[in-house]
Length: 371
Ligand SMILES: *Cc1c(COP(=O)(O)O)cnc(C)c1O
Image (cartoon, rainbow, N blue to C red; front, side, top):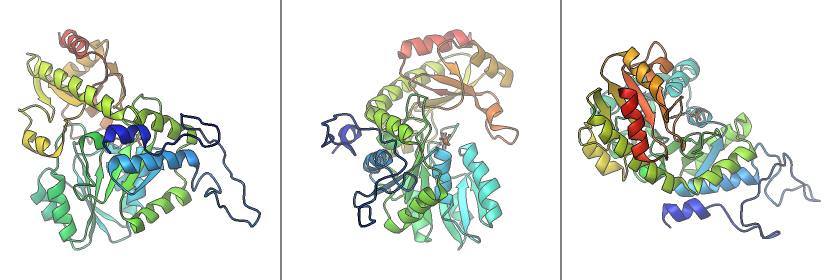
């Protein structure tokens, strides 16, 4: 079935007892044992598994084209679940430009375990190849990247990594399975921050790891159930509710983002627009090959420096000044100042998360803010 149909129906059924059409919210932390001490209904205690989380996991596995999905309390916990499978002596190749929390995990949590990490420009496959060692266990990708929206050729990296017995993980948060299918391209583990497009309304945090391999899934499931970084049933229920509209939200937000990107590219106060859907994007051809849509994040470098960029963000009325992305409301953020002193992000860059408002209103707001 197509993703629109799965988004509505996967992991859902009419409740056989009550006839509820909408999914139930199961708040129980513990479940009744059978007379013989067993758990024939499959649930014992809500940390290892519960019905509301299971329904969300079933849905996410199908949306992403995986066999197993494991949900966490945040995207960061989902990322750490993948890194938890690394052992002392293992080597990781990760993107120079990736979500700053992921970089921080690798530096501050994973490296002290005795894992070696190299941060390289993953947009060039040769650079990944040059960084690989016999001990390379994991190649981590994030494409499109945050915040300059550079792409990595997923299929090419998978060929390279698998030839050297390394696993490929991909953070698919910016694209979602609507726009990019890493597992179909051979990636071993996909990770999402469900806080973004999956939740879609800036009101719930969550994360997920999705994969096909049973043994690897068992390791991640162990980190989930024993490590305990689980989402609440209500958060799972909210995310499942939002997923029904994900394909249509993505489509509309991509159209709005393309409109905003074209408008900005024609504006005299703008130095450069970074959006994979623009023919001026250096990897537009790869974007067309790898993604059926180009996402709803647009980064814009304004003329002048950090102060000029801050001033534009200070004047927007519809775009809300806030971090995060993927909600129905459009956000604007001066990214370098959020990422801290070691940031590689240009000081005049503003990252826009384009929402579901009318694109003419969004363009008009940016026009008055640019002045
Ligand atoms: C937000 C984000 C994360 C982290 O997710 P949280 O839910 O905030 O922990 C990871 N990767 C990307 C690309 C993100 O945008």
